Length: 205
Image (cartoon, rainbow, N blue to C red; front, top):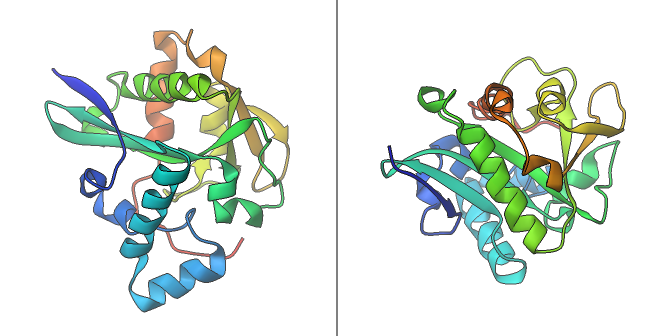
């Protein structure tokens, strides 16, 4: 089984699930996001966002391929490029951290260690670029797949709460710890990244 993890670019953006290619939950502020959906242009806005981040900051995601078939992805960027991050009561993300925006692994490929490999690849990339941690806004009341990852699942893979909140705690993962993860973390990561599967409804926070 051949595995490849390639940087996300405009060329392989079509390899993301259709619902994710046209989702701008993180890429636009709530008002602009709703306007894009009403105008029918979220796909174009997504492309414009990825293009701008690639030009100004560099790689902002990884796509996972198994035998040349796309089976997962992860998206991340400094909070300055993530307008939605300012809408949370537990903002802002720490200046030494990059925000884990969202991620996904196809159900057919969960339980194979892809989640661990994917996050470790991101960790190595960000360490080379001088960052110390990944932070994420968790959903403490998570009930169904959406753009926010479940807080419980983030905690299960090593994130620590740095700003508690009954609904949207901010959590942090020190990057160096991810490089020494053992296989017992794989199932938790698969649950975490497998949690985002449906087109989310844009809703105000």
